[in-house]
Length: 109
Image 1 (cartoon, rainbow, N blue to C red):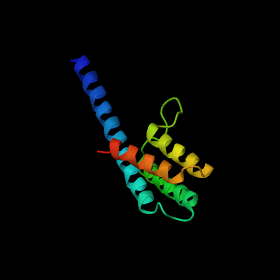
Image 2: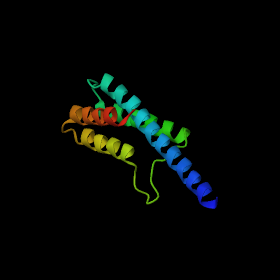
Image 3: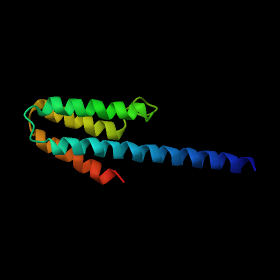
């Protein structure tokens, strides 16, 4: 009986973690869609920083994790950091945004 209770607790926790993970990707997709709509903006870096800030604010307001237990960024945060670095360097700005959006399309439900 005791093992069944522990199994059910772990199963519930795993389900909740998966739901939160999926929600983070869905929120990320929402904000990358905003970037895609404004991809021809003159000041792309400022726009990306602003949208990224809104994304982080929504995650925090919903108490969703930004880092794992080892203090590493979650992969839905890492894709945004990579995109910001790409846009900041001014190399292939639009490609970085498109790659972010494509990743979000693949990961979101």
